[in-house]
Image (cartoon, rainbow, N blue to C red):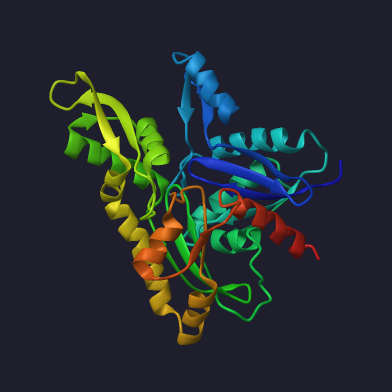
Length: 324
């Protein structure tokens, strides 16, 4: 097999691997199944979750990336080694890899990511900011002398960027993303309905009920949890209308980041934003968020068709351009 060039997006909750020729090769949870006695990584991704579910006394889950510090470089390298093999098979020619990274990584954090990817089997590693990768992945024209705005919403952070001729002229990062949306739902259920729910339940509520569009059809969902006072199981009916209130704080943080970028942008580029709108990418983009931006800020916005995988796809494209 010829040496492959890979685009890699190591998310807090999901890792995506892409190539120019084959598109998305892998998208799985950034998690390992670790032997509780030996601390050896036995599996990664979806298979790791299944392994721990089948043997909870012998295995534990380890999520090595958070906000986005690499908590365990060895575990991350082991996960990526399994993912590379799963994505491209066994090959003597180690892949070159372009990694989409958050804009606010420190040098030490960037080095930790690079070392983990090299330890996983990459021959060479390049790093590029996630908003630029996502912009390439959705097809924004880097040769155009027109300002283009992109907002990338991941599990642990939101990055809003103004891009001009392939460079970020302004960008703002806030520590708010999909995990914070889930936590906001958990807090709302506890405070409003006196119900304890888990992260998985909160995520399902978010996915099934959240629609930020002002014209969406109202939905209802029965939610099961434990009553705060007695710990007795209880079911409450939740409406999609409540979600806007439940998510108010993290949504405000995202909107503030967007406003900050717009305010820091010159008049000409603000005119470009008004004309071209905002592109939304990332795995934590909420349903109706494009309509919310139109309602609240008066700006056109669109959710990219490949929002979940745009950063990894763009990283693969950036690597191909680097080789030319």
